[in-house]
Length: 482
Image (cartoon, rainbow, N blue to C red; front, side, top):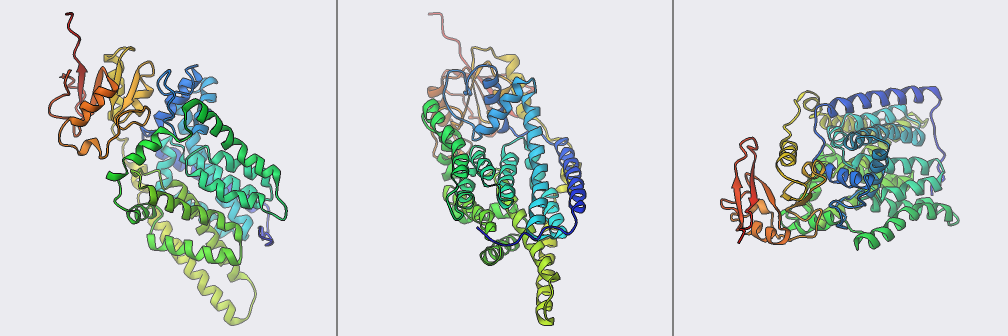
């Protein structure tokens, strides 16, 4: 939409050298953090879908049950293809997450270099992303967040390069990576297709992937809305009490909240004046905050990832634009004002960068956290049979490492079970568990100690499992021969 001339760098080899250096540095940081962290339990829900698909079990969590419990069909399909090639699914999930994060760092550098011509701004933006403790944790989680950010930034890079059809295609795939990707696609369509004449190629490329998935998911699952999303929204009553709390929680991940809000508002004004294509990431940030504020889901650390990626891009553009403006010729008064503006932006940027790196040292030095749920998964694999139904709270590890068993969760993420108005762990009695057992008819139930009732539900009894110190295990009583 913008007719601004692309500044571009003065030399062609400096950006390449710096880009390669950033890639290596970011990759080294991500691998160090990944070596000291565990893949998130939630990631293994998608891993089980991918493994079942690769093994011929269809797009299902439990064989024969058409329930969509993953929010990332694109990641599921990618992992299934890699599994068919013999790659271990959790290893592939971690590799894609780390690779996606590294690609984001390089894309921010390339975009800011092209838009502003400022290598300092481009390096600063890449550093803002690479040194973020949030992004390091996201890369080590195995979740779909890093892949979504890479697709967002990739589509934006193609858009400013004038490759609208390719930009639209990546925008369409973004919508299949996480639900928030729909916001990006909706905002990207006018930029990819709204030039002087409608670009049918870009429109078709953008809409084909989500429409194809919409048709398949409606036919196969009965609804394109993931069951996990429906279940989490059903628990909103015990999540954040209002939209303001959600917004504050999300903004905390970006660094100093006031600086983040100021940067987004300042960029919004400058985007209308200088570079309207920046309205895409700025609009995405606004839509992201609005969507989370209205739905008030239970918050997890990886949720702010895409918002943070947009913020890194916008903040780097602000820095690069300010430095470029300060270097342009003008009268003394204008030069002084531009210099003061550039110093102010640079100081705020440096403060944000320092605040965001506060937890990075601990990520690089802390020992690997305990794998309580992974130990539970292995214990259940040894002490149950393939005919058993297992009911647990966190379903990821248990489900993936017991794929020949029917595995259900307390919250209805991967099956259509009982709904709760409040969190089960908040209830003082065991009534919620009795309702669940009546609906799920599990053979074995594993509760964390804090959620376990003092008495098991009717027909079940606690069994001795001293090696499972963090869980209480219940088994269904065998039917009487009479």
